[in-house]
Image (cartoon, rainbow, N blue to C red; front, side):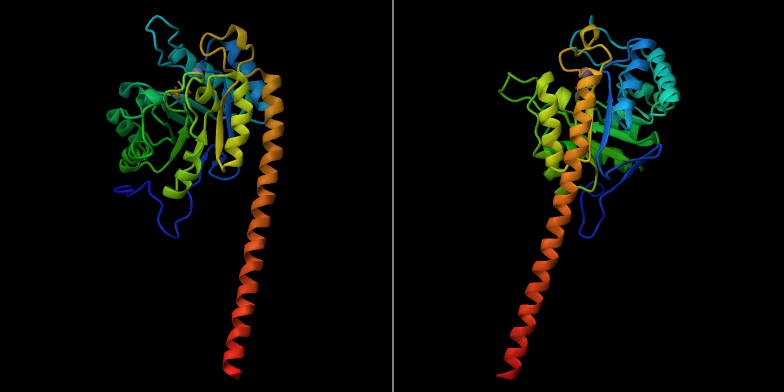
Length: 299
Ligand code: PEP
Ligand code: MN
């Protein structure tokens, strides 16, 4: 891919690991979980405690919600950020939260551990530049109409401002299929791993919009080599003010986390066995070559 001077992978270059308050994204599997939006103190604290207990490494939650209708719940703004800060102090979980306006980047960055740029803003170049100057890690979601190349070029905008802490997030794209909310493009996991050194995570909640699909698509993402997942979990999904049909309850999330841990351990075993097989294959080829050379020398 042309012009990916900073986001592109180069021969011999290690994959980037982004460290956020002790959490290393790009190593193992990092799960970020929490409600779609911060709604109240009780809701965010209960949700944060639940995801922490289940083993999530980070808390997600929107204080600024980009909604289809201007009359829908838009988020609590500053009050929501303060509640996230309280949830962080109570659980120790670092926070990922969305910023939607260039004017807000610096002060939202005072609350967020990771600034999220949502799908609808992926190509908001002023916002990307501002986030690049904020000195905070940035989670860049794929735009719903964006190609792989457009998405990586948006990461390049942030990197070009001197901010190397970029995490990519596949969250589904618009296709002719309307059964699912979006078409979750898991082929982006190996695509990113081949073309870029940046970590790649998947959001199966917005990616499908269907509760029963969150678990299978999360597991599929892990099988495809994802670095992390961003999953919507609400302490009481039926009362959620946004995205109520796709948010897991704490018990389902706990069961999913258990399966994720087991699958991840199995994938590590598989990778280790593959590496051992490859090494044994190399040794065998080496021995065969040596025998051949010795034979040629004797002839
Ligand atoms: C979100 O994660 O809260 C969100 C709005 O997601 P997206 O930008 O992917 O639609
Ligand atoms: Mn949502």
